[in-house]
Image 1 (cartoon, rainbow, N blue to C red):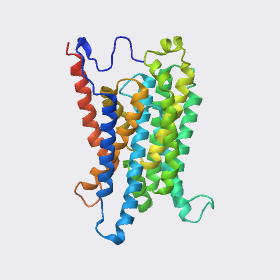
Image 2: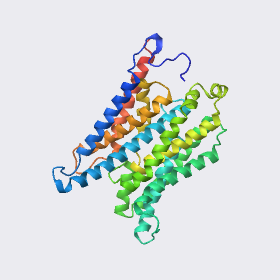
Image 3: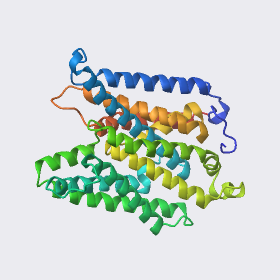
Image 4: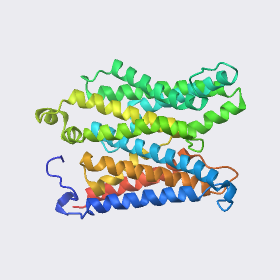
Length: 348
């Protein structure tokens, strides 16, 4: 459902802007995603011409490519959900605090690895699952605090302010844990890599943990497309049209938390994906969440995979962190989209 008077592909002042057919948009996004994935498999350290090592290189790059695609898809769909919930295209998944909670949980897990390496092992838990499990538990803890402080019957502004305050608290705790990690060089490097975003160490176990979270999160979020469309017209009108605003708000926050937790568990802190991808795709698919969520899943995955490829080809002794690349690419892109939208809004 679109707000009254707004048609898909229309511009203010009566000037109608042509949009490509929806099938063409999906095909274009699929082609971009396929091209980025093929580049990801073909570019990297190591020579694929060596037959004895080709299979190993391809396996490592395939895991990295899959991790980047899952993280990008999860963040982009989470951005769609948050922007629909707050009816603001400038909202990002970080506003509800669960991404900061996932990041805090990841740092705690990294510190726990030090205890693990010193002999405190858990027989049924693999060490390479400590980080993703820490991120998921951190996001769930942040979600619990969010619902405890700001109940779903509260105003949406209370939910937004609570998420902001929780994010500030978690960021402060992250700084404290980062200072503790400086005592060991290896641990400080791991914390820095996690903070700047990185998918180079993604393995099969991390993918096996994240894939169900991302898959079910996107699928279940898509089933809430109709209520989210109603929410675009305002909570009072959505309630009069049959939407249970409190239930929609609660479950949208839950799906967003699951998706951001999975993304942080795979790639650490990767910014701007949930902000710019939905904002850019609305021009082509419209405001309907049933169309926007699949497009965001494809576009977000393609964007992060392409940024990961770019991080490998830039000159330097080591790879540029993925989160740095998404920020360098994402911030100017979002500024350009914002200025373009502003010019169109005032062109009567």
